Length: 434
Image (cartoon, rainbow, N blue to C red; front, side, top):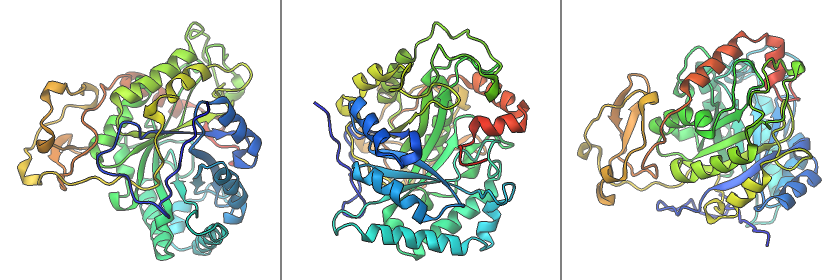
């Protein structure tokens, strides 16, 4: 029987309790036609063992809420939350630094209109069932393929400015802010936390990551751990009190062949790999070693490679369904960060040194403290030194996975930096960005 999941909207429900059960991770998707088509949403839900709790859609500053309203209405009609990827970009001035323009007030009229449209849209729903949204602003900021990339100071300033506009308008209770990095640092900083705008304006941490197989000369078939463990450990070590989302995730098919139109100059050395095995390993690894991951949004479209699960020629669906039918992925989606209860004061915690990320290993159960004496260590990402979390809060994260694949990701970053801008732009840019 098809399993149905219930969404928790911040408009009419409280935040998750501090003692969360294992079954609090949700699944969602990006599907073809960007939310404009109910058919693609319905087809994904029909083919998978759990309905999507979030549907990812893309928008730029060329479009107001009036453009997003029908897409969001379609998504809400299927009991899912719109995950709106808002890209600070406009086709009229494609090279402009929109982040700086936001802070300078040049986009105030646009922002005000966007918020007003969102408020008007919500008002059309009856009291007690008014929908909320997730807002993923300026995603993959640590890459070199978007004009807002590699600008940490500008991103943080624009993020806080935009967040303040939503707060002033009184709508932030209905908006979950998703801070989303790429799994590979292709910028000038190699420190994803340089872009972090602050706990008070972020509800979800997030990572985008793909297994590109051997289709590029600088990539090879990567496991889920090799794709995500390094960035995951960086994030949860620095910000252990936030849930984490995989806002875009997928694997190539072994039968995918390098396509020069996408700048792919690799080979078919991954022909004997398996997307089914990759998908099963991913979902098993998340359950075993990635407790901060509370939402998974599959990139279900065949763009540069065969990312989808349920299209002709795609594989991975059987493994996906076998895993998500289990209780672990039967969670409810909260747009806001789960509440974390204070346990011990910072003075009760001792300072400890942290190894470099590539040397981190899973903490063994025998080293865990009793629940009443849980220690919380936050990694100082600048000095590489352990520091007691200032709030002394209990964290759902009891361990981190072993970091693997660092050299593979470094090679990937080097390859991306060397790619022609024209190819790189098409490689990662959403079709809305020309």
